[in-house]
Image 1: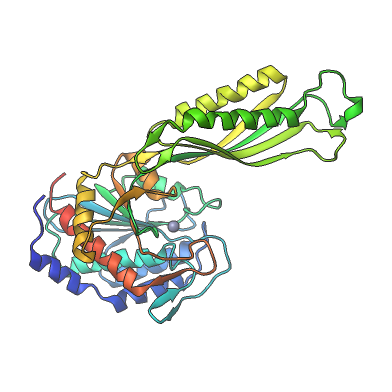
Image 2: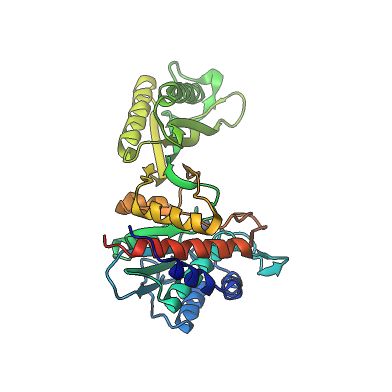
Length: 395
Ligand SMILES: [Zn+2]
């Protein structure tokens, strides 16, 4: 790609207004928006963007409670479209109002992720005001239904399904120390082992009554034994496949034979596209034990996301690293993504590159969210310059 001229870079960076960015972040944090109830803050964001002169669309996207917020900014020249995508909902914790003190913004969503959304709004304003984007455009999308277990990410999936998608995506989650190029897929499992009959005193058990606790223990042993071969399945940055059991529950009193045993944990894998084979193999292991023991073994799986990897040669990655280098003096080291976020969903469902990069904020999912204004300004700069590098070229 051809690099943007120095003057365009300087003009763009000079136009980023820290006070305006902070004001936007505070206005968003000031409106409570627990997951599935982000309608009022979506209205606020739409009002802010309208006041800035943008035409705002409000697609319902499977969640009438809080229609999404969409802005399309076009340079008027051919080129790629960079998408800024963020979630406006916050976890269900008591509301903390915004407070700015000694350069730090506190309050619900300041880390996760209203601060990051304010940064991409500021980047958008800057690009529109300076007309420095060499081609293509910006698609801004903001939505509800992200945070689990309350949200099921239906609104993001609906936006993707309905075509609200760019040629590359930036997600402002609070990850700043690495550029995530790979992540493991995960399936959270909930297994129930059931024997026929009713709970009964152990000395009165008919001969051959299956012992669901012993069978559960055998299942845990078999899952752990899988970790030997699974540890050989590796991928750069993310480690290996694994099984983990975090919860085992059965029985009421010491001398009663129970009918059920519950086991839950996580199966993680490193190879993209392995979701179905991994689950099929897991089910086969359960079916084998059920057949051996005369029990019924059922499993429920929640799969937040498949494994992914992105090539460091992707134009979006190259553009991002160029921007990061200009803003901070160095590219980011490559690394893993420790969580499953909307970027993982976008990569899995569309195959498009998505980069998770946000402020080095703290306290996500606690009552102590905090982010410095310096970090918000830094990411606004990185977002704006990523657009300058990415959008000038045609797809
Ligand atoms: Zn988040």
